[in-house]
Structure formats: C-alpha cells, structure tokens
Length: 313
Image (tube, rainbow, N blue to C red; front, side, top):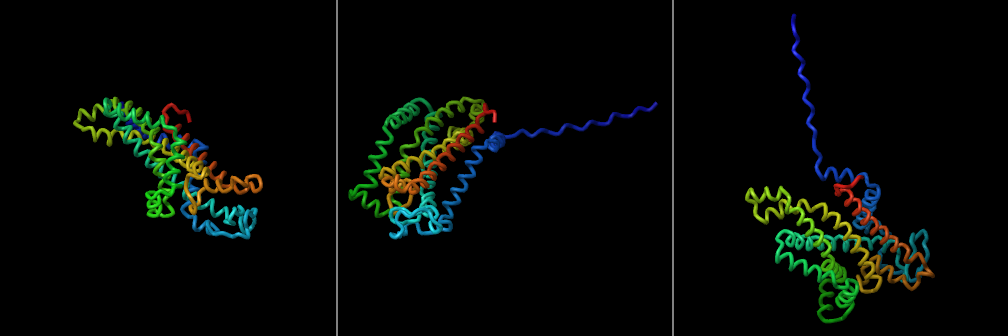
C-alpha cells in the first residue's frame, strides 16, 4: 500500500502593514469637504500663477468713462470707482492674498516649531522662559497692536519708514504686513508643538535612541520632528486662512497693503461707501475671501480628522 506525501500547503502571502501616512491619505480621500476644498485651493493657486494670462485687462488701467459700470460682455464683473476691470483685479488680488497666507504660515510654523520643540524637549528653565514669553505674547491685544504697528510702518511718513518704502518699492507694504503677521502669529503653533513634544519624548523609541547613543540634536531632528509633521501640516492650513482673513481686514480698514498693489481687502475698502448703490463692487472680492478661507479651514479639518487615530472616517 503506497502512501502519497501530503502536498505542501502554500505559505500565506505576507500582509503589508500600511504606514501612518497611507492611512491618513486614505482617510483624507474619503473626506469630501476636504477634497473639494483642496480642488478649490489648487484652482486658486493656478489662477494666481497664471494671472497675466487669465486677466483680460491690466488691473491698474483706468477708464474714467466706465466708472461703476455694471457687469457686461467687455467687463464680466463690472468696473470700480476708477473704471478698472474688477475681474482682473480679483485675479491679481489672489496673488497677494495667497502669498501673504503662505508666507505667514511658513514663517509662523518655523518660529513656533523651533520654540515649542526647545521648550518641550529640554523642560526646566528653558521651558519656563519660553512658556512665559508665549503667555506674554498671547496676552497682547492682537487687533489693536496690528493696527498700531501697521499704521506706523505702512501709513506714516517718518524718515525711516519712507526710506524703507523707497527701498522695497511697491511691495513694501506686502513685506511689512507679512513680517507683522508672522511675528504675532506663531504662539499657537509653539504651544501645540510643545505639548506634542512632551508626549513624544517619553515614548519607548526615544528611550531606545538615547540608549543607542543618540545625542539631543539627533533625537530632536531625526526622531521627534518627523512625528510632528501631522500637527504642523494641520496648523499650517489653518494659519493660511487666518492670515488671508487678517490681511483683508487690515486692508479694509486702510492699514494693510496699500495701492497700487491690488488685494481683495483694499478692493472692499474702496467699495465700502457705495455698497448700496453698486452692490457688485464689494460682492466679488468678498466672495473670493469667503471661498478661500473656507477652503483652507475645511482642508485643515479634513487633515486633522485624517491624522487623528480616533477618527472614524
């Protein structure tokens, strides 16, 4: 009687574990509001990049015969108080608003991440000094301080300010506003990063890296900072929307970016006296600000849900 050897069973295929980034990306793709917002942001960025090709007219070209002209075939969104084409000004305004938003977010994230990392990692006196400085900055009345500083640097005729404006040219007010917002907008990031570092530095992989001889710099930049990316990305998207809205508010009050630079905020400022007579003048820049800020906020909410391990997306 012959016995047949049992056929070898096929080894089960190895399962590939998905990384945290892959899981977060999958969750983000299922977040409809965030994906729609991402599409809107991409369109806005493309509009800003290709503004010279998309704008039908020079945004600063005046046509006094078309003052407050309503929307028409030649001027799809109408004309403003100097006969300038509103569509062209809205398109070019996206350049300044997005540049302010992205620049402020990047600088604020860099400052806040550095200070929060140092405070959370070293603790002790370093943490106390940085935390007290953060609390002092947070105690300052932000809007009045913004108005005073921007008024002094943008609107006055002091010799130092005049020389600065002449050196920077038409972009002087843009650079000044970016600097002011960046120096007053990093505190939230610093507190967020500090709290996250306090949690991460007590985990086992940090102890293992220290046991293998890693110094403080290596632990901070090679082990802690990569694990802060999720928090930083979410905060950055929210900072962009906040900066755009703050710039529009300052420009609307006349303390922000000054002409001839076209921004959505100073377009609203020019239209505040004719809102009832010519409602289309403030309508389009206002919608542009609303859509842009909502898009960044919804994207930030989607990223927060995607990176949250407790999320049920």
